[in-house]
Amino acid sequence: MYIQNNRMVSIELSNELIPGLPEELGLECLTRFHYSTQRIAALVCRRWQQIIQSRHFYYLRKRTGHTQKAVCLIQLRTGGFDSDGSKPVGQPRYGITVFDPVGGIWGRVDPVPKYPYGLPLFCQMTSTEGKLVVMGGWDPSSYDPVRDVFIYDFTTQRWRQGKQMPGTRSFFAAGGFEGRVVVAGGHDENKNALNTTWEYDTKRDEWTELTMMSQERDECHGMVIGSEFWVVSGYRTDNQGGFEESAELMDLRTGQWSRVEEVWKASQSPRSCVGVGKDNTLFFWGYRGSRIRVGACAVPLGECTFVSGSAYQGGQQEFFLVDRHEEKFKSIHVPVQFSGFVQSGCSVDI
Image 1 (cartoon, helix red, strand yellow):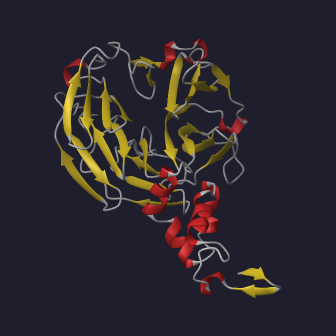
Image 2 (cartoon, helix red, strand yellow):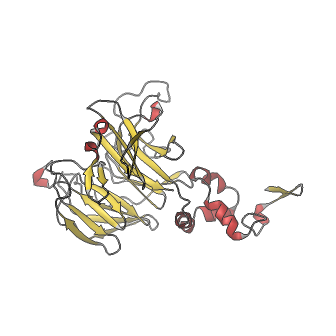
Image 3 (cartoon, rainbow, N blue to C red):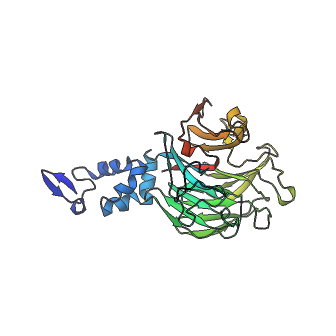
């Protein structure tokens, strides 16, 4: 409903997207909404809901530069109390933190309904088409590996459960691209390193097996650069902890793998801490700043990178935005409830 000439008019009965405005201007207005308001905007009328929740609308916003990049972190919950008023004890609990780097706003995504008290340990998280995808990990109660897949839609602010992963794998690489998620490497329930690769279609809710990598890669790191899916380092079953210098990259248009040598420092874990330099070489973020040497986690945001870590083992977590060109570390103010250890993270173009 809206008011025009002192009378109430129903938007549902109007043929115009926004009464009084040409269609293209009405659509332009919708594309400029901040992602945090989209759920409410979708309640205005059926047409707004259909538009805002459509895949076409997402790509329209992206093409016109109206999407917003957010940092999503799998982060240790700190402080606070349980629902009965007691202090949390026992197994550390992880949730998903969201940081808006433009507004400096921190928040949390609602828990996954199946795991209301904390995410599966060491689960993987990536994003595609403005949605979060959380996969795998270990059950926080039994430590058994799980094959669960959950998708969070920022437009509706709701979770849905996807089709389970085809097999059990832990510490694998993952990356999202145009509604698809590719997973590769990791290890199975018997600690055997894997070289298999699968693709999950979030829209069709289907898994498809892809061409295997040239070798096994456990505890590797996955990242999408342009239209390439990179799997950095990792180690073979017979060389536990012996991280390799090589990487493999898949052309996401053709599905073909290629291999590159000497792109990573041997014996250095790449998980969540791989950076891409000005000359497109890979580097370890922990070596770029004395205050993030331990537990470094980096989330690229285009012109800058979100980085967290500690100066020493057990030290206080610190958080920064690093300019891509000047490489200056700018400290971020973080409310105490969002100051916990960051296990991993990804950016979401919402």
